[in-house]
Structures are given as structure tokens and as C-alpha cells.
Image (cartoon, rainbow, N blue to C red; front, side, top):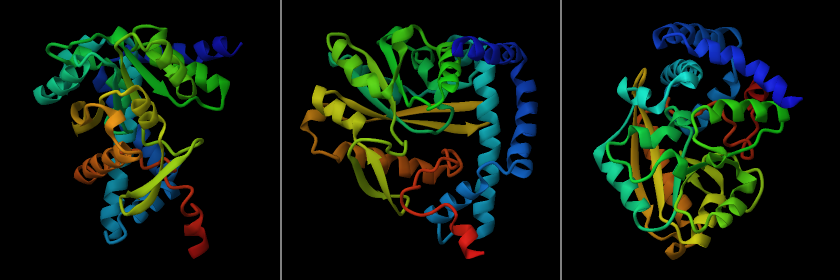
Amino acid sequence: MYKILAWLLALPLYLLSLLPLRVHYLFADILSWLLRDVFKYRRDVIETNLEGAFPRMGGQERARIARDYYSWLGDLVVEIIWSLTRSGEHIRRRGFYRIDADSERVLNRAYESGRSVMALLAHTGNWELASNVPCYMAQPAFGRKDMTVAYQQPHSRLADELFLILRRARLHSPDSIVASHKVLRFMLEKKNERRVYFFLSDQYPIMGAPKANTFLGLETQWTLGGEAIARKMALPVLYIYLDREKRGRYVIKISQICSDASQMAPGEITDAYAAALERDILSRKYNWLWSHRRWKNLWPYNCRKEKE
């Protein structure tokens, strides 16, 4: 039943995706305006996050970051829909996504070490299209069939079915996407196969022992799931940043955190990931998911109402 409903919702999106990208960007401008000025989508969350991360920044500058953020969010939505009927090769040919030569060498070298690879991403750029990374490379050492994306399963069964339909449009096989609570078992079953595992590691910790550090000037909790698995299986760990140079132009930048996670102290990989992500957020401040309740455990999101 849920699958049928999800396909009924997905079908119009597939038909809409057939439109040219320039038409999608017209929709994006309208969507950004609706989210920002009409529905005021998570405005309190965005303003509170920006105020907490940049307390010394002027209100006008924070407002500009918020405006840029809403523009990026509108683009993100329509780009995901547009990509449903586009191959990774097509996306590369039109210059939508590219990977620099140094990053390609880092990724290939890690994969050719003979072990699977743990790649830690964040909600930057257009992370949904990062699963096509072999298509963006000049000489990839692996293919899309060798990749697995770990995702956080929504509470809604219908939402989960819909997201799976949309995400599998860009993936190679059922093994290409696994719910995060099942990924350890999956990796143990596939321990004799070399795979590249993508983890979105800037989620708010829902379960498990969190680690706390200072991130963007705030005490921040992180789950140790990806790090713990990498240490258990002695995997090389990479950090991937998805930079947005301008509308419709993204660059994948990859650096190595370690060549063998089992040699790292507990929490050391997460600290390195957080430091790298903070650096990249500061370099392009709107290019991160500010509408996410990243610090909901640290201060109340109704603080603005209390002040009033």
C-alpha cells in the first residue's frame, strides 16, 4: 500500500524532471520566495542557528546569509527533481558536478589500498547527487555498483518509500542504499568486498553514545557510528566537501582523515571531520543545512519567543 502511494507521488516528479534545467530554476526562484517570505519555512531555526554560530556578526549580514540559504534550498529541491531522469554522465557533461584531480587521486588511492573506504559527507552542496561520483571522475578505480550510501530512515513509512524511489533513480542496485541502523550488519556481510561507504555525518545524534566538541563556537554532539565502524574494520576514512561555486556548478573536494581508522584514538576522526566541515562552512556560509535542528539539545528553539 505504501509503495503504491509513494509511486503515485513520485510519478508527477518524474514527469516534471523532463523539463529543461533552466525551467526548473524558474521554479526554484518561486519556491525560494515562498519558503522565505510566505511560509517562512523554519525561519526561527535558521535565525537561531545563525545567531548562535555567528554571535558577533551583524544582523544584516546574518539576514543576507539566510537569503542566500533560501535561494540555495530552492535550487537544491528542483535540482534533485531534474536529476531523476538524467544520468551521471549527462550531469558531468553539462558541467553540473566535477571533481578536481587531487581529490580524484585521494579517492582512488584509498580504494586501491585493498580495503573498503569510509567517506564522511555533510549536508553541503547537492549531497543527493554525490552518489554519481564515479561518473564525474576521469579515471575512477571503482563503479557505482561498488558504492553504498547510508541514510537515516524517516519515521514515516510513506516518506521512506518515496525517498527510496527517488534516490534509487540515481543508484545502481539495491545494495547502493542501506538504512543507517542496518549498515553495520551489511558491511560485515560484505567485508570481503571492496566498497565505498558514504555517511552523512552531521546529523543530530538520535541514538548511541554521542561525542561532544566545539563546532562553530557551540558545544555540539556527534554520533560515533561511522567512526566506530571504520575503527572496527580498520578502514581508510575520507572527508568529502561538496562546494557550490554558483548556481548549477558544484565541485567535489576530498581529503584523507586517516589511512587506517583502527590506529586513531576514539573521537579523533570525528574531531578531524568537524574541524574540516567548520572550515568549509566558514568559507561559504550559506552552503550548509541551516534549517536542520543541529543543536536542539543545547538551547531551546523558542528562545526568540521568550525574549519577546
